[in-house]
Image (cartoon, rainbow, N blue to C red; front, side, top):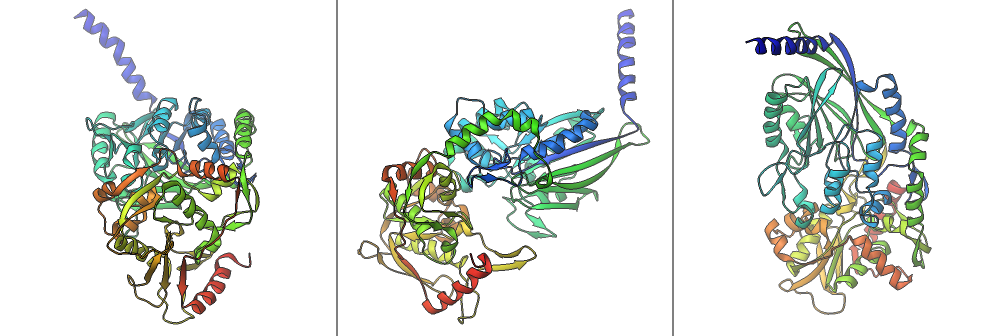
Length: 577
C-alpha cells in the first residue's frame, strides 16, 4: 500500500503539470510546400539563367518565422520533389551512392513531415526507398499499401507536439499511379483510394492519439470544385474534405494550382484547403489560433491562410553557402557537350502539325526499338533548342520527363483509334475556314490551350491525313506505311511509345483503342531499364551531328483552312515570336 501511495504521489504532480501546460491561448504557424519538382536552388540549369523561385528563397521566410518562436512553426511538404530538374535527376541516377540532395536540403531546412508524390515514386524503388531512410522526418502515404500484409508501405501519419498542442498529420498519395507507371516501379505496393483510407486512419488517429488538430497532406488535386466532379480517383481532395469529418485543414497539390478554399464537411464544420502551386512559387502559410474551451481539455481553432509569393523573397545566404559545392557539380554536369544540331527546333511548331522537334524523338524511338510505328507528343508548350552544340541541359528541353520506352503490339485498327482519340482532343471539327482549329481559351493570363498538349500524340512510320471537316472518330485516313508497304487494319504492328502512354496515361490506349489495363500489360513486349532521356543522350552522342528534319508523314486538310488557322492561332498563343 505504501508503494502504491508513493507511486501516486509521484505521478499525480506529472498529470497536474501536463494539464497546467495547456495554455489558454496560443498561436502556431503551419508552413507548407508542394510539387517543388527539384526547384531547390535559385537557378534554372536547363536554360542556364537565374530562376524566379526556389526553396533557397522560401527558406528566408521560414527562418524569419522561426526566429520569432521556433517552437511555434510546423514545416510540411506535400510531395513531388524528386523529378523535374537536373539537380534531382543527378542525385537520383548519376550519384546513387551519395546522400540524396533532397535529403540534404530538406533535413537542413528541418521539415517536420512530408508526403510522397507520384513523381517521387517514378524514379523507382532504389531512389524512394533510399529517401525513406535518409529523410530526418516521416515521409508518409497511408494509402500506399504493401501487397504482402496490407500495412502501409510508408508511414501513414505522425504526431507533432508544439507548445503543448498535439497535431496529427496524415499523408496520402494519388491512387492513379498504376495508370501512369509500370508495375516494376511500384512492385509490392497497391494504391487505395484516399477516401476509404482517410476514414480508416481518421478513426485510428482520433481514438489512439487524441490530437488537438488534424492536418491532411494530400498529394492529390482538388478533383471537385463547387460540386463539379472531375477525376475523383486521381484528384480526391474536395470530396474527402467534405465527406470525411475530422480534418481541420488539408494541403493539396498534384494539380499545380494556386488556391485557398473552404469546404463545409458533413459535420457542418469548415475545412481549409490550401494549394501553393508548384516549383516553390508559393509557400502556404496558415496562422492557427488556439483557445482553450471551458472544459479545459479541448481547443477551438481559428485558421487564417495566405500564400506567400516566394518569387518576391531574397535568397537565403546560409542556404546558398551550404550547398554551393553540390550546385556547381551539377552545373558542370549539365554543361557537358553531347553532340551538334544543324538547325534550331521548337515545340511551338508541334502544336499545329508535323514538326522537326517531334520527328526527332519519333525517329530515335523507332531506331532504338526497331518498331514499325512510333507515338509521341510535344512535352513542352514553348521550348526551343538552338542549332550548334547540344549540352546535357538541352536533353531536359528535348524530353522533360523520366519516362521509360515501351514496345507494344497494336493492331492497325487500334493504331487508328488511338490517333482518332488524340486528334479529337487536339483539333476542333471545323465547319468553315473561320472556325477555331485548336482548343484555346482566353483569360486574364492571356490565351492558353484548354486541352493538354502533352497528350497531342502523333505517329511516325505511317502516312496519314487529318480531315478537319470530318466528325469525331472518322477524321484520320491512313494511306500506307511510310516505307511504302500497305497499311492493314487487321495486322499487328510493333509500336514504340513512352511508359506514361503505355500504361494508359491520357486515355489513348484505354478510351481510344479500347484496351483494358490487363491488355496493356499483355501487349507490352519490351521496356527499357533506364529513362528515355538517357537513351536519347546516348543516341545523340553516337550520331555526333544531328540534322533535325520534318518528313511531313501526316498532313491536315483542307490545307488552305489549316494554313489560315495556323497563322492566326499561332499569333494568339505565341505572339509574333
